Image (tube, rainbow, N blue to C red; front, side, top):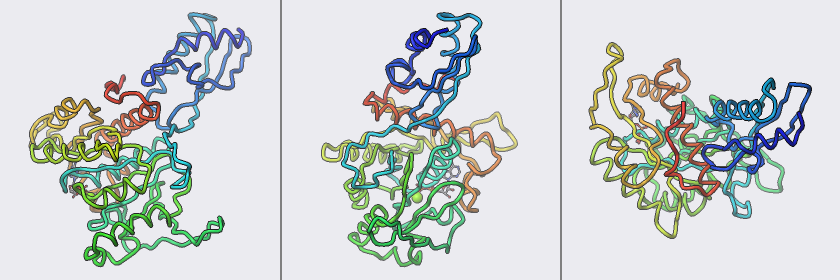
Length: 366
Ligand SMILES: Nc1ncnc2c1ncn2[C@@H]1O[C@H](COP(=O)(O)OP(=O)(O)O)[C@@H](O)[C@H]1O
Ligand SMILES: [Mg+2]
């Protein structure tokens, strides 16, 4: 077998989302050939790529059918997380993607979704941070069991003043107003103080290198949202909704806000939370308490990807209250819903970064 033959075979294999072949996308590296053995590395656009197995199988097939029927193919994976950062790198220069998790309405599970998304991405080997931008109602300290803990200051040695080091828990970096001031005091701040706190989260916190920074936004569409969008190069927004009509109406406002010409933040997709309830003793039953498929219909209406449907589960609520989010538990059914959501999210982001219409994110091929 020759290297050129291998490359030719691999140039017939498509990256399913990006719609181009692996060779054109420069994803193939380190081809090594030894008799019937061939190995190479595929460089993915995200460490949490859900399409690995599919691509490995397609590569094996192409090489066996086009080059050598007896080939023993070993595909290794590495990643270089894609980014659409085109700013000159002043703001958070080492953060590749910034994901704003928002909702029109409070209490739809934004913080729960943001926290478990961050953990699912991290468990897929990405470097992840979670910024709690809900200045008036921070949830991160309780959800991560770090109430009362205070971050340290560190001289990061770039001639700047000392920076705040985010807390680390369960493998992700955390920052919340609740970690800096007494929880009751931020509640009485006026708008400008809250906005300046957000700006400090960006300029004074040492986030360092991250593949994904997840921002848990306050409910609605107010000043803090504008500050976040004007201060940070946000890659895209995830809109959380429940299937209920009132939540859907508010979600539409959120979609409209992000779509405004002067902000122009792409919507990564919608996530429907509290989609149905399944009692532990009747695992086959689904009860659509808040209505059925409201998020799905909204996604269709706006031509946006539906990133997932998360059930209403007691473990999710208990995990949030006890400081051990459900992604850190052994509830594998619920974890699977978040893992699939994270997978669809990184696919949609990779497509945004490659300037491909995210409405084309297909159902995961299993
Ligand atoms: N899918 C779910 N199943 C059960 N409880 C949930 C679910 N999503 C959120 N909750 C609970 O609902 C409450 C509100 O969720 P939260 O994430 O704080 O909402 P928001 O940030 O939008 O205000 C919390 O007690 C949380 O644990
Ligand atoms: Mg919240």
